[in-house]
Length: 286
Image 1 (cartoon, rainbow, N blue to C red):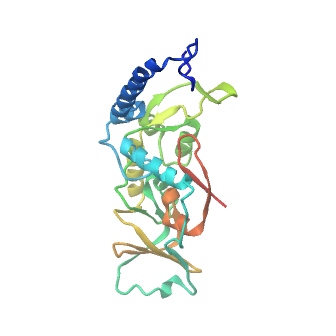
Image 2: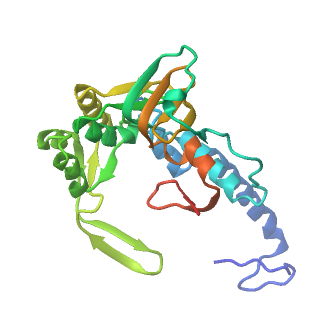
Image 3: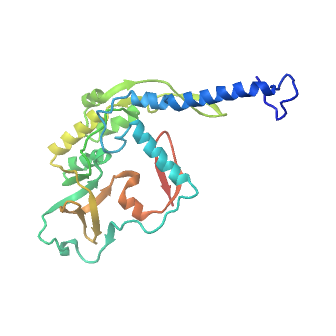
């Protein structure tokens, strides 16, 4: 090890002579150039992953560019200069009277028991409700499709889809692409522990979501792909949901499964704290 001292005219075990400094500076400059031109390990790994299966739903974007975009969003939130100004867009409005009094203005109306907004994760709940005989609709702003990259889950959690009757055990096995035990987890300075059967399966969302979508259709569910939620009018006896494309849906219940970027969530809660558990980007509000 060599330590630089502010005084370079004296010599010693941990000092450099003044004549040695230029060569060290040149080495630093060269290392800096190499560091700027050599991709990071994260970038190399992520750019080696095929992005042909990227989709627009939950967790659907997993390119290096998407990671940088999320990192910039997080940096902006953590910045002292980040100030939330103004009110969020008014999406949900409480109305008096009956939803039957809504003026549709000649627009077509479809009636449901339940409408689920956000399909990539909402498809599971929607299919379960549809299997009970309810008329259910799903609104998804993109194509309802699972990504190619694995989701991690435990077998116990996955079996819950079998227990409610929307997935068979054979279908379950076909969606599993990897299985591993045990897993090591820990916190810096606190040691590590080995755990069994926790997030130890890798399942393919591309297969699992497609199975759910087909089952949802077979139960009589209706999917609205490529549609954005515009307004939600809440009455005492029902809800009227207007889509950007002019469609109007009325329902006894609307379920928001659009995630932490949901316009409904943004209207309801002021963001006050943030938590990043297990690689997920999660907002916490009070």
